[in-house]
Image 1 (tube, rainbow, N blue to C red):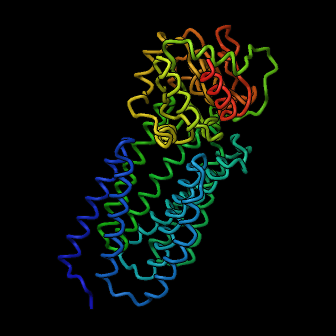
Image 2 (cartoon, helix red, strand yellow):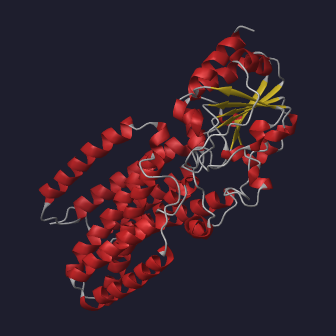
Image 3 (cartoon, helix red, strand yellow):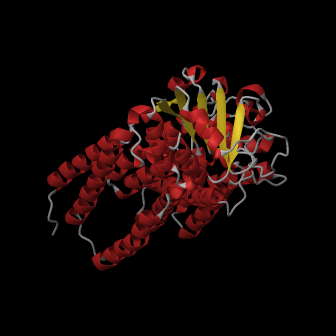
Amino acid sequence: MNILSPEWTAVLYLIAAVCFILALKGLSSPKGARRGNLIGAAGALIAVATVFLSTRFENVPLILAAIAIGSAVAVPIARRVQMTQMPQLVAGFNGVGGGAAALVAVLELAHAEDPWIRLAIVFTMVIGAVSFAGSTVTVGKLQEVISTRPLIFPGMRWVMSIVVIATLVTSGFVIATGAWEWAIAVLLIGLVAGLLLVLPVGGADVPIVISLLNAFTGLAVAASGVVLGNILLVVAGTLVGASGTILTKAMASAMGRSVAGIIFGAFRGGSTAGSTEQSDRPVKSATTADVAVQLGYAQNVIIVPGYGLAVAQGQHTIAELATSLEARGVTVSFGIHPVAGRMPGHMNVLLAEANVPYESLKELEEINAEFKNADVVLVVGANDVVNPAAKTSPGSPIYGMPILEVGQAQQVVFLKRSMRPGFAGIENELLFDPKTTLLFGDAKDSLTQVLGAVKAL
């Protein structure tokens, strides 16, 4: 006997759905992100509890065992993951969600007689398999166990075309016959499609693909809700699919690209390549004492953080440096590019962790108007988002991407490990500008030395 009546089940599902909507609202800004996460978690808890109290399960011990195993694996990973690895974690969990939806659809095929339900099952299997395989590749590219270069082979277009046709044919057989053999074929072809979709994507475009695959997983979950007759899954999946699609479009626009160009750009040489070659052209370098003098006696300093700051875990040091400069009467602000780091909001979260005031974080449109008034711009571990090639080199893979106009400042200081190009794999002409000074070394170590020198002024 079910503990909850259908009426109470509907009410609790509605409450959970509202929680999910409020969670997305909270996640739209750094100030509300923590609250949004908590509200979303509360909604998920309500949803799971409602399912247990309103459904007669035959295999409760197996379900609880699966939950226990999943929690035992996921919780330690989530707690130990570094902020620099957060995109990999998001991609991995997203892929698992898509794979789970696909497997549920396969199991439900045995109970499906209605062709429309079978259509929903096939849709879930294909999209879920694509999301799982594609997300696995994105994790590998971000972790650099797979080359960040676009991986293509001769005739790849034709292979992709064959895969698409094979997907349609096998899907038709599943809808017509309901045979599990054809369902397995659909899953396998979907996995191949996911690999072929993401392997040709270059390194700097991977975060956008993660967002796109997140939208795919949302659609797969929504379709599985149709299969299971669970309205909350439909609502939750639709929310994820819609928000993921909006985020994908916003990220692509922030890079001055189209989503189609990002996914299929490698076929015509337009995707980012992630070169590792270093330039041997001469540059003007400085010591930490030189940089400290530049910053300490400036009136207006803008700091541009990038992925290198995240890798070095230097957010607390740079926050302390900003505080020390402000104590000397220097105006300090942070310029945040929409795709700084490797996912939207990465830098905001990193700096918020170091208690940098939200009002000091300024987005691209706002901060670009202020660079011309800056005495010094300190670029820490960022390269592609300040590279003028985005405006001056039509053949560049980042051409058309809106950038932070740091070149308008009086002086520019770059903190870099080496002359290796950024994630997009192209040289930055700003490094060779007479107004630019480079300080080589680990970002955290360099910032620590500069901070000490500023305090000693």
